[in-house]
Amino acid sequence: MKTIGRNDPCWCGSGKKYKQCHARFDEKLKEMADAGHIIPPREIIKTPEQIEKIKESCAINIAVLDYVGEHIKAGMSTAEIDQMVYDETTKRGGVPAPLGYEGFPKSVCTSINDEVCHGIPDEEIILQDGDIINVDVSTIYHGYFSDSSRMFCIGNVPEEMKKLVEVAKECVEKGLEQVKPWACLGDMGQAVNDHAKAHGYSVVKDIGGHGVGLAFHEDPYVSYVTRKGTEMVMAPGMIFTIEPMVNMGTDEVFVDAENDWTVYTDDGMPSAQWEIMVLVTETGHEVLCW
Ligand code: MF3
Ligand code: CO
Image (tube, rainbow, N blue to C red; front, side, top):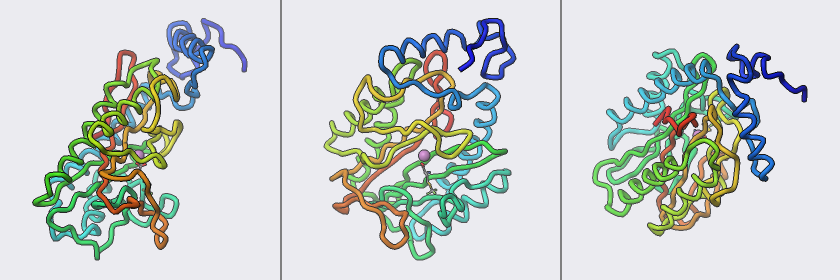
């Protein structure tokens, strides 16, 4: 690789001199790499301009989830949720990212009770009193991607399922506390996992989070079954999701043989998931989407 002069324009496109922009950043990453850590590739470090655009996409994602939260209720089909997401996204100028993504047929994922993720909306799937549901919304706006999900409790949900939903949210918060420059993704993963385990729950190991912003799924792959001090170093300008799937029982899952999408728990026990998008900043982190 051609080395960049300290007075040359920075590689990030800011127009600033390298020495006044990412020179220290690169030094720090070199140190971390020399110490044996995995470091992020440049293409996943977002510029301030890209971050602004990604935030516009996030604003739509948040508005759509808010709208779903205000309207979701027992007796409604998941196809109605899909229609709401399509309408609320497109009227704001966005495109639902799931629609047609690797053949996914709908605009949103709706996963109920023992469905872990990637549930496909259907007019025959009717929300029942006592259900818990994850609604996973992703938006493309002017080519920039956002992705976040929330849980909704429908009517009278049994206490132990409410607890699962609550702890799954706390897992995200515990992970988030670990997000800061030059720490490792494994610090975050372990914090998530420890909290789930402390409540007797398990975290799905076969499916994880991801970088996001310029594409739906970018590097790194983000696991929540990891150890402190391992996995990729977090550097300012990285954006990734924290989205652990927390199971009441076994962490074993399987994929629907017919639709090839919906993931279920092996033991039929419930699973809960919240997903946020987080930006690593110079001083810590900023939540972009929840
Ligand atoms: N929103 C999911 C995620 O968090 C991705 C779903 S892919 C889809 O990564 F095609 F099912 F939408
Ligand atoms: Co995601």
